Image 1 (tube, one colour):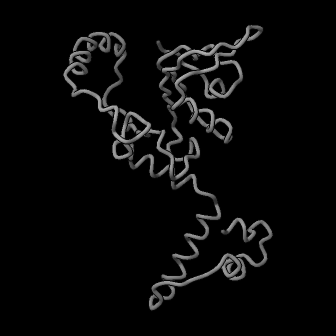
Image 2 (cartoon, rainbow, N blue to C red; image 1 turned 120 degrees about the vertical axis):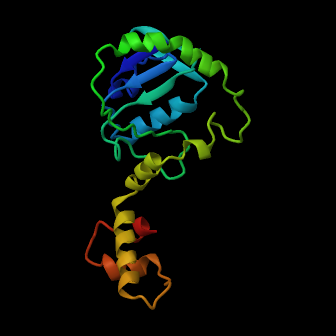
Length: 200
């Protein structure tokens, strides 16, 4: 039911190592390329998967995989757009107590209690108005919002600082209107990287 893969394995052509698994985990996850992000997004909602193996024809299978990405890069392990609803990001604080070398044994002892806990949960609402099992209210965490903020383009962050400074330096002004060309002229006149299309 479970497999531990590398983040690269999730984006490779051959996916037989995880195509039939229920829980797919990757440690030290850092998804830099947009192609990897798009593939993980698709895996999060796909009901079937095209299993690819070397020298064997592809096969379409039902897909039930849940992907768990673990990382220490809590703010920038992946770019997540503002509108995205497929990721539930949890920041787990470090354990401050003494290291437990018998944790595997203790986890096995907890299985009956954990199963009882799951059995006593209310029925799952499959019609919560979202294509995800968990609603947006449930998945909205401070950690997710931090990553979404960090994922914005450098120009967005730069404009946010410039506009905030503008209002701080001009307390009498409560609002202003500006076109993309006004912003280009005011703050980026000599910067050829910043086009009016990019500003817009």
